[in-house]
Image 1 (tube, one colour):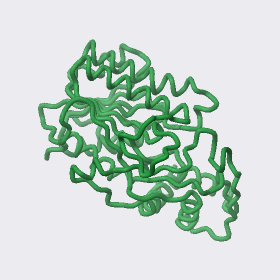
Image 2: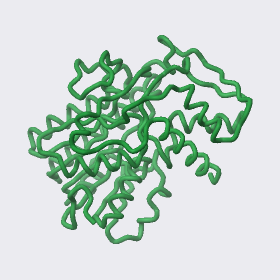
Image 3: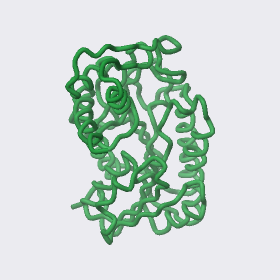
Image 4: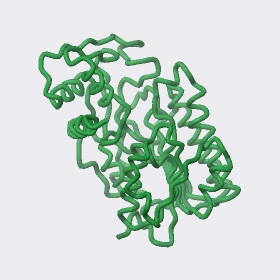
Length: 328
């Protein structure tokens, strides 16, 4: 079975492949009979996410750090397609420790590009960027050509810097790049984000739930399977040069409603919600984009659309994470 037009002759590298998104991508690639290599330092990911493939001859796992060039040189060798997913996904941490996002997002991307230039020269790089590059967009839904891009978080700035590096390297060294600006991606194996946080808080105190901000933050959520199907289509349809695609749902959901769904799925009653009030007009934290919905018309024109809307994705994810974390 072919996935995204890839075949037996292709060797695919996934950075951060033991993480939430990476492990689901690996499942899709391996189930299609492809040759896959992973590099991950396991600081955020888990070997449990990919252990089913560890003895498969078409799978190779490198425990390595993208801040060490020698690890990356081994990783990129002989790979013609690279999915660059490795990053620190915690947007909030940038406010207190911006160096984390510089090192793990910007510097790691630069190191990967240098290794590609010196030791790899792949045909295609797929990069998972973020809706946070748009900042507080005046146009919603926000299209890919929206400007100027003014991220308000260190995380968003680090993703935008990585995009710029990828554009320049692709132009100078002749590989194709697909830059995917993602909405909030949710699903099983996720161990960060609002749904997971609410579940953990309610396990500690099933009577009251603290909600950062005013609860009116409204954002788009996309289920992981829909993201993986978008990746497959983009691999098959990419034309060359550097292409940008938003990937998200066509609607959005408010934080207070997510809280209601999680409470219901946990079977709790009489839970009081405590809103912190937040900062800068009800944001959860400084740098939190309060309203986000992406225009996905460009991706839809290729024949893709999400199967689940934001509320359906949230409910399904809540069910799955509750079930998974009962075993933890």
